[in-house]
Image (cartoon, rainbow, N blue to C red):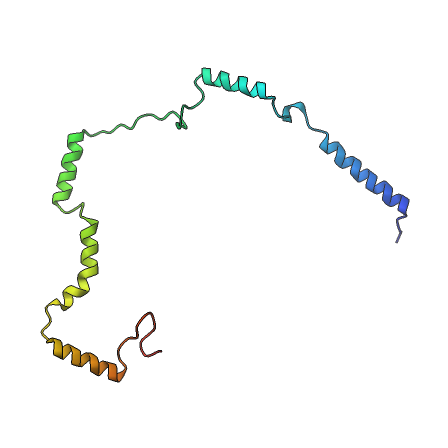
Length: 138
């Protein structure tokens, strides 16, 4: 096993530094940033050639074209609405949220009977607790 002397370590460090410094200076003229005047001239030329988008337009877009006339689309919409195909999301939500109420709407028990059943269930500990707890746990 050989030990490096201080001089050998110094020479190795200089060699590494020299190798890294040549990589840093190896930039070509093509990788240098363009001058402001050059960039402005390129932008003017592209604008005159119509290559720059105007305003918020990102690309030239071709207009949408439909194979149906407006009257045909309206007739289809009316037919779908008549068949219930369009449906109102408000009606569906109302029905789903009120379904439990509809099931108990036509009950045969009186209020007093329901109240006594509830009190009995409370005495036996069968009522679900308030909140998100599971029944039977406190």
